[in-house]
Length: 131
Image (cartoon, rainbow, N blue to C red; front, side):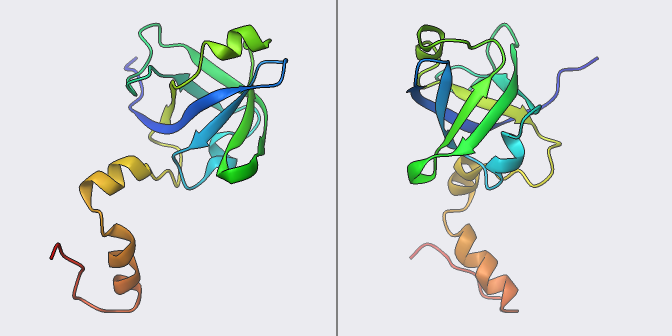
């Protein structure tokens, strides 16, 4: 069976508390779906590549956090010491999760994507371009 194609959906910013929770900066427009309890995501490296061991992480619980972040508890990360090892690593999810938008890739491909979407919705055919 082939490994699923993965998309970056978040970056671990720091540990939170003493029970292994992580503060994650979501890099998806649907963090509530991606980090829903029971969802399986994959460990990444600090460079955004899938971790060499292919470790899967199962979300135990999650909740929104100040500044747009999310606090996420994963099965198998039980204390602050283990959580600290995840700092600055990426979290990836299978591409087939409906509605995923990788904002990093979208910005790199088209820095005017938001403006172009608005123009399309307004029925305009002119698109924003570099000046």
